[in-house]
Image (cartoon, rainbow over the protein chains, first blue to last red):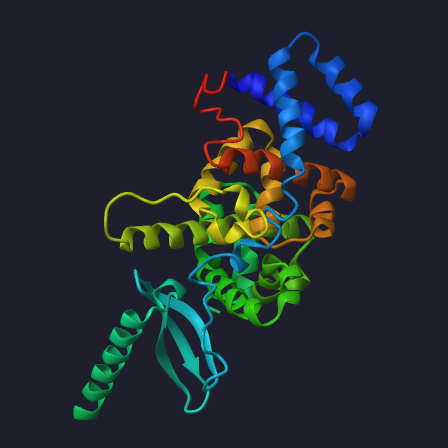
Length: 136
Length: 200
């Protein structure tokens, strides 16, 4: 379908949504005339419209993974203020801890990574990092 | 916040003239702040679903702009610029994430029938962005409504107010835009326009 024809079908479809039953059918039929392709396209979109109830209804920021991954805010009063990095396994957030007042990095594993092996590796990494801190 | 509300308000006024350079300066000034706000929304959303109804860009407007020195046009302008920035933030994020993934090309996830109940979790924001660009060539207002609503988090009422059109018109345009995008992003397209003669 060429751009113009597509735009026309879309405009017709937008008008058709407002009408019901016979009025809709009459309008679409009359507006499309002999243009069978437009008629087909408008009818198709009217069918598709019934399936879009929830589509895009939550704002984008609420839908993005892993940014939407739970940041451990409740534990120790951390407030995430930015994303430092996103990897294949986890996201590292820049966060502020209230007490003591300091900036920290919080690594949150992606949910898909929560199988036992990955968790073991994650804990090992945490232990290694902790040892590093102690030797300083 | 990195810029004072007075500064951002000045930039907003300059940008309202429509000069590309001024618009860029405004976008640069509020990008980081919006990113922080977006992130806060993302983490808060999990705890309190009522926040879904809150317009992200509305909150940004209150925090970043000096309300005493603004008029109606500034508000409309800010909302559209901010929604566009949120769109960009999410695309940047998706691209960075894709780049991080080992093993070659970007994996696109299409919407299948089974995802209709919660399609957003599987929605490829880059594919949506591209489809939205296409929609803009068919109907610019519809594309703008999607930007304000999906990326900006604006309610139907807010959009009606911003664009000075009736609430029912926004409803209708929103449904039309959603349907078009859904069709575009569906597996292989409910009707694949790009696929030419397929299925005929």
